[in-house]
Image 1 (cartoon, rainbow, N blue to C red):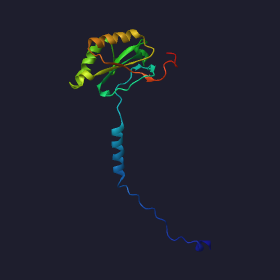
Image 2 (image 1 turned 90 degrees about the vertical axis):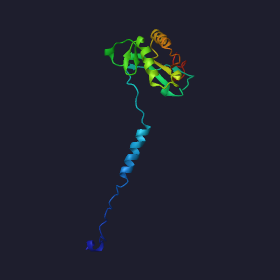
Image 3 (image 1 turned 90 degrees about the horizontal axis):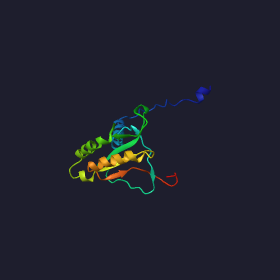
Length: 159
């Protein structure tokens, strides 16, 4: 009896979803990630805990910067003494001149005088290895040197 009273007027049909714009959305997301993603330049082979400083300045053009990393190796099989990393390999101070020459070659002739060498040095590394690197940089005529730091109050951390 009740069934006759509440009649179904017709089944609700679910309309088909149009997928015509789906490829446009996929390509739009693909282009967005391609444009906004940056590639990691080097795999870190050394640990660098940057010292802190309260007066820091950002570099204007990072494409003119070459990085030298100094710190303890991330893998203990490479020893427990501070090592130098140039690009993706360990190096000795004597190899820095070749590195600087190669880095200069990749720049245009007008940008070569603007090249800056950024030293990313762990805060616990002794100054002797840094002095050796600075001497090699001087021999290679790479006189624009930058020290990478983290922003902070050096007095608050006991430095």
